[in-house]
Image (cartoon, rainbow, N blue to C red; front, side, top):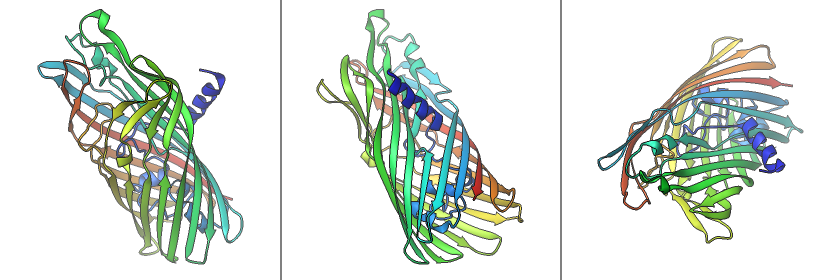
Length: 411
């Protein structure tokens, strides 16, 4: 890997390395305040600069410069067990994913009463599992095309602009410069004959892509407001080491979904507020991972997922001038349709979250967020392309605990 690749890799690691604990391989870890309220209302609450990750139009609600710096630690528990083909038992992998540290940064700069600009660095997508240990089972035949390492990580660098049309209505748009890195490895001994050792997929690639986001906010009055946004994601293309079935390719193509969301915030009293979000993600666009180049184009993996919704609701309570408490619940629908995968486990998930803000003074706040993410036990049936093997059956579950802290400052 040349120096340019090494520098890009270092940038990616410094921004985010993540294991998905939302539908598909979508991440929900953009802020401590968001985690504490299950991201309910996050596209319109605008209590700190992290609103940039959800809706650029909400920058219009800031009359002062705002900075937010956050860090999330994800304690991930992905279990893949009782994997078998017919009478052959390949065993289990009780620890298929690593714990992760996920940072973020946001800055909003009002230009005048009408315009504001913002910059941000965060992530929307990431997944990482390693079940290559199942290849070392000493069985007469092994589906090495299903057992291996899978990691997809994106880092989103965002530049946004908002415009206040009038006292109630604001719009915004942003450009996403997305850096991504993908690792896919499928290799092992197909049969108990040592000569059957083979490498089917060996990918270590990275690259850049462009996406964007548009949004709007409607402030009904100073106690009630609504927000809407639509994030357009590209088909990500990465180059580097791209080998599939003994052929060298130039690029690997990974389609990313678009994200649409609506959110609301309602202050019921000086102490209480409620908020909510409905979000649609076009995971139906994630059909195939393909490779292109000097050899004929090929499909490495087909998923054919379905579009998904998540719904969240939460509340905020102003305890006193120093402390604010929040809590939330989210139901996140899984994306798997007819084709499931051992390498990217998925199911419906429930989020139970709580958080608090400690106001150091009128300009500085420390935020805390805690989320318990609970998936479901899912039976996975996946077809192997290895001759002599058909449908492989396994059982998966993905749980996590998120611990998040954030510092926000108004200038």
